[in-house]
Amino acid sequence: MDAPLWTDRHAPTLADLPQEDAREYLQHAVDDPINLVLYGPAGVGKTAAARALARESHADPENDLVEINVADFFDRTKKEITNDPRFASFLRGKSHLSKRDMINHVLKESASYQPVSGHYKTVVLDNAEAVRIDFQQALRRVMEQYHEATQFVVTTRQPTKLIPPIRSRCFPVSMPAASHGALVDVLERVCEREGVEYDADGLEYVAGFADGDVREAVLAAQTTYEGEGEVSMQAAYETLGDVAHEEQVQEMLDAAEAGEFTDARGVLDDLLVDEGYEGGEVLEVVLDEARSRYDGDRLATLYELAGQIDFDMTEGSSDRVHLSHLLAELGREDGPRVDA
Image (cartoon, rainbow, N blue to C red):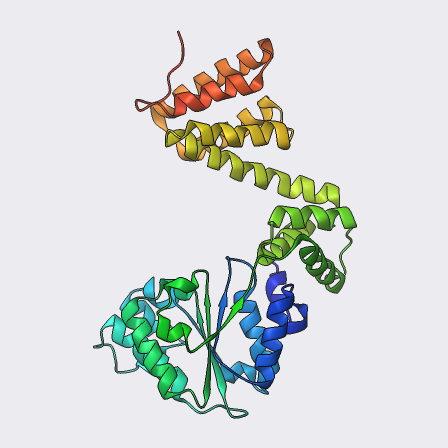
């Protein structure tokens, strides 16, 4: 997606957040800053909420908000960390430190500098479920040492992975998946700001596609608009329908290959019954996926088997039975085979 992301261009204010309880708690935190743990599934807006809080809390949020994504450290090498321009000033002359000590040093330095505006700053620790116990102990000490001038906001999908001393120093704020109606409201607001054509059915379809994920809903609306020039029911179906059933087919093949035939057939039933796809349409997507998944003899055998399945579906009465045969063959330990 080459255009600026709508998720960035229309970052929510606190008032825009679709989670009513979270809006109330965070608004209180503007007037009475306390440490927070924002927890909930991926895509619901935890990081966006932390940024919205900082924008309303600080006269100079660009300088008084520090974001540290756990992946910036734990998924990178020492060289990558020291070369990151966000951390270079903290780590100049510190290349001898261990990776753990580098992380602790950056955290301590981020918390220790004086606020640019007001009497405190905000440090956000994002995706904290991946933080090791020893680093959490260091975080606890930093929180204790710099509590007078630093507000800590921890975002996580799994709050139980935080050690009790951190949880006890933070007020928990639940960020559940957005309701369908709240997602529709978010999409309508973004489409209005973008000045794009849309209809109510289109927004309903996109909201259903995203299933509570705010980020995915907004990006899906942008993808639909960029592909079709509008966010209508037909445009959303044309753009997102293929994406949705491609993901389902991938899930179905994963289950079949793992020998989980019941799960694979359950997804097949969803495609044929709930989604209303024809057997030939499902088989076509299976072959599209197979080209990126298999090669050599396995791919050739699967194509030959698919030809047989396609013929059987034209002659038979149940697409489900014949496609189930395909899934069963994929689950064979020695690979699929074609009946003589």
